[in-house]
Amino acid sequence: MEARTLELVFPEHTNPLGAAFGGFVLGLMDKVGSYAAARRAKKPVVTVAVGGVEFKVPIRTGDLLEVVARVVRVGRTSLTVEVEVYKERFGQENGRVLATKGELTYVAVNERGQPVPVDEHAGMD
Image 1 (spheres, rainbow, N blue to C red):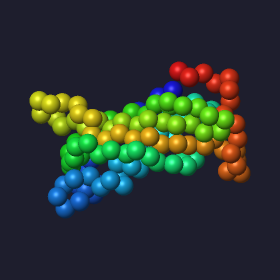
Image 2 (image 1 turned 135 degrees about the vertical axis):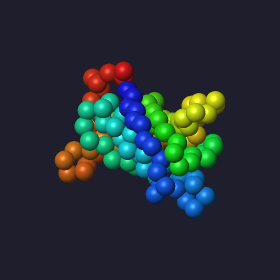
Image 3 (image 1 turned 30 degrees about the vertical axis):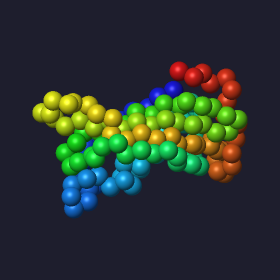
């Protein structure tokens, strides 16, 4: 299962040098990762772990970001999602570049926020 979105980087997302705050990028990764996990679980999910995040190249004001999240493992109640952030600068020759990647883990929950099993019958698309 996959989810993706586009986001433009504005000055309020960056430090005084024009580079995106790590927290801004992590927030996008968590949001899109949760969409992929919830689609696969067919129920709400909460974030339980963020691991192995690698900021490969700077993301700057004016970059268009494509955030792509894919479920890579399903446990009894948990789902592991690989998230990649690509940046694109209009008018530049190098085009779309992998800027950040990481792995996030979510747990499926009920309306009281308690962990519940992921439906085994939901397919891995």
